[in-house]
Amino acid sequence: MDFVAARDLATVLDAKAEHPESELLAGGTDLMVEVNLAYHRPAGVISIRRCAELLEWTDRRIGAAVTWASLEQGPHRALAQLARTIGSPQIRAAGTLGGNVATASPAGDGLPWIAAMNGAIEVASRDRGVRLVPWDEFFVGVKETTLTADEVITAIVVPDDAPVMQEFAKVGVRNAMVIATVSCVVARGDDGFRVALGSVAPTPIRVSGAEDLLNEASTIDDTVLAEFAEMVSAEVRPITDHRSTEAYRRHASGVLARRLVERCLAA
Amino acid sequence: MIVSFAINGENRSATVAGWESLLTVLRDDLGLAGSKNACEQGECGSCSVIIDGENVCSCLVMVGDLEGTSITTVEGVAVGDDLHPIQEAILEEGGVQCGFCTPGFVVSAAHLFENNPSPDEATIREAFSGNICRCTGYGALLRAFHKLSEDDS
Image (cartoon, rainbow over all chains, first blue to last red; front, side, top):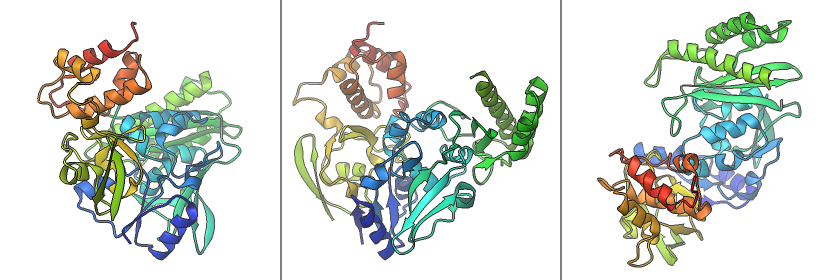
């Protein structure tokens, strides 16, 4: 098998079942970098870019091949915000939320949003059907997921109680074409505040201790917000690497989370 | 595999490995060396091409995916020997230094003005956020794009 340009999901699932060693191609913004710079030669490629079912989306179910450019126009505020910060217009015209999930980089900008929504990853295989994997059971390490070789990510599913109030921010060295040093989504629903961060642990994370502090406070004043920011900084698990230091990432995590909580409070 | 598509209005076919980048095929197989190969990771925009109306980095496009598509490269922006107004404006403003980024800027500009003839300052800057000029000659390029914009503000 060389290359399958699938137009429907049945073709994708058949090809993946028969050639589990083959790789899925959506926007190519990750896979082609491997091909170009790491001399990676895929054993086979299944392109889902024009697969009709994977391009469908509603506010509760986002097909895996929907591009960032489309999501910029979508109904979820933080998802639209983060989509607009990804790469450049060229990258947003190609890259997809499903690809972000598949790559599972700690810095994947879409992933904290999925965590804040309590989202799930819908995956399908020809022989074993469809399963819905909660986000915290899907992302298990740096670029590591529980997707199996015959499975395909078909959609990102958002529960009905997904908060309408949601804010995104990230820190990087410039506006465009940057890999986040820290990214953060804060959402406020009926169950209170939800705070998720990216680039500060092997997977996207929720800071549940800091969430509890906010949600159990009788009033949220400057003292509570300061303590909240400190708890966020303490709860994240960043490393020092070529992009930043552990200390800066802890600091920025607290600052961003507090800023977004304040935006929700002011809304 | 054999892939057939329209490039700059002309039907072309190429015998390729499906995983090859469009950029490689344009430059090495189809004799279209205008799209430049610089970063090969979608960072610099010097290989920008328009595929079915979308401005993308051709280094990140697998050629196996392109059957039946319509592609515009920098070679297709001018009409014969007549430069496109974008190219004239860049020349007039001195928007070319080493020239390596120029094809990408021309293609991104063609895409921008095709979709929005009167972009404002912020729109112009965002539209070119994926094109890097290593000579940092952005001032002259921005002047050229402002000149083209029908937005007077």
